[in-house]
Length: 435
Image (tube, rainbow, N blue to C red; front, side):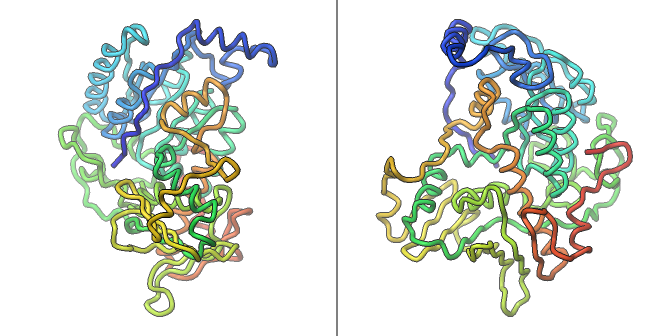
């Protein structure tokens, strides 16, 4: 499900790092990395050390993306078998990169809270089910760790805003895993739209999957290798079912994402990618649509969202798989991972001129985050951007669940005079956990 972003530039060695730091000292006072990067102490090394929260299928993929760029020295998982497999893979990656990064060992933890106490971990990768993203990221930020959090950033609007506040309060760098922003095709598509190559945008069609449904699964015996209570964590408690947390030998992306207790359906799972591109192209990274009309079989055939500037966005299958279609007064642009084309066809070949809007350029989502940590610079998909995109996913789900029109205030982050809908903006956090 994740696209491999190319670009494996080596981290600067210590001599280069100190040389660059000497140049910077002409304008700035040099301060230790732990001051610039957050409250947690970091090792006196040029290399960034990582711990993983969640060590399942997606984490094994991310470990490959971080290979050669950072030291993976720890991981935590509620499933001991998945943790053991990740540990084996991390050892293999460490051995492969020993010449460049130096030797290091990996320690596994059954509870990520124990891992967060370590002073030698600079940053964490949160690759858990969605219902864990906020709590794990906020606890990591409070421990002074930088965070790479998988998409969608949050499981509710309230959780997303709490994550933004924690990142700002602790002065750490968070990258959201909506990595399509680090793809040249998506960037070029968004620059074409931003600069008016298809004219004024009238409609945006976003094709992603369906809304989340309640967990109706029957209970099964809990495997001995799994701490099910900790897997559920802050979510409402439901009985174990292997569809939610399959055994390690079943190498699939688990179906917890279909159920509203733990995910936002494929509407959120892929909406965090495709709504994100719509937001970027429209210049709406700090806002959202204000009106939401679920399909009623009459006036609205699809979920229809309206921005304050009257641009219409529809949750609509336009026949090309998951992707985004922009319709303007001068043309049309379609973009996804497998295509970028326009009508008229010559629009897509246009080169963005120096005097036109040029978007943040990242060709490696993972290195972009690591560079942001070193330079204390916001990455391409920072916490506010990730929050705004995941909020659209949450609101779209709410519109489907309530099956009636909704009026959203993107400044107050509340529905207008709608107590029932606003109750769904709030996080549902179980017993001992908190934001």
